[in-house]
Length: 385
Ligand code: ADP
Image (cartoon, rainbow, N blue to C red; front, side):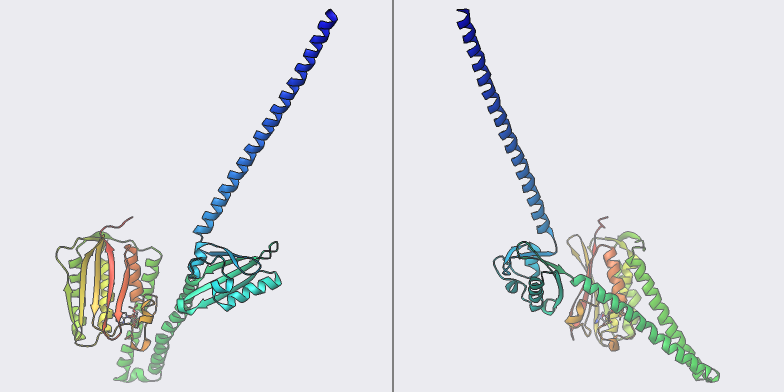
């Protein structure tokens, strides 16, 4: 009896051990599966957020990114590349169809053949755009990654810098050569000539004055550009500003047989600005209007209320500006036609632009060759500092 009980107890014990172990084992397996699923989920969400981050970067990039397969078919294009190549949906099109420029297509072909990185820069004259393409071959898939950069601004700055150096050398060389010629003539005997002596001396004074003015303007320009000029801000009446500038320039306009008048409503809001600097802008613009308008013409100073500020204008009935030059006249030393410039330095508009921009305003010109120009600039009611 006790043996039978012992056996039953042993069997019971063995069964408990067996099922307990099975249960424990299946729990272990379940935990393992749960952990695996958790890890997979974590990896998936890390992968998804990585993807989203990469997509955001590619979307926001100003450089174009294209991916092509080994046949040159585009399989990915970010928004910047669509903009740079002016196409709505490049995917599934060939590189040649999208970039439409044989030098760039050649760069891709060369990279495919050599399996090496290639870069090519081109100018697209119709759009006045400079593009640089870098082709990076993908050795694993045989495809390639194409990076497109818009170098238009860099190229433009480089041209402006080169022009600036050549212009300043030229601007200095002319008066210096003339000073040298005048002093040599005086040394050669003209000094004791009662008629020629004073005449040459007067011309020397004129040349030195022009050089001084240019140096002063350059200094002003570099101070304004580097933000060293403090604006003396006050509440200014647009009409008073126009009347004051007109008073200063009236005599010059009359001498050139031009009429100068002010058109400005009385109820314009005041602007917060530096009176002396804004007057300098107006004087520079009126000075040009006088220089480039034939006798009998008209110059009108305008001001009108716009959203958030006041728009000023200097309108003339002068020779106008060719449309090709309009975008460049605010550059330093830029003159449309040096022979007609009437002795200007080409710095007046540059200074005007910097003063206006220091007031957080904008300056531009509307002009028709042969009919006249209107220079506009805006000044906000209050500066958003
Ligand atoms: P400048 O000292 O030569 O006048 P600016 O910077 O003031 O230099 O002007 C640059 C060029 O823009 C001038 O040389 C001229 O060719 C053109 N320009 C400026 N204002 C006028 C205007 N009112 N009418 C025609 N051309 C103008």
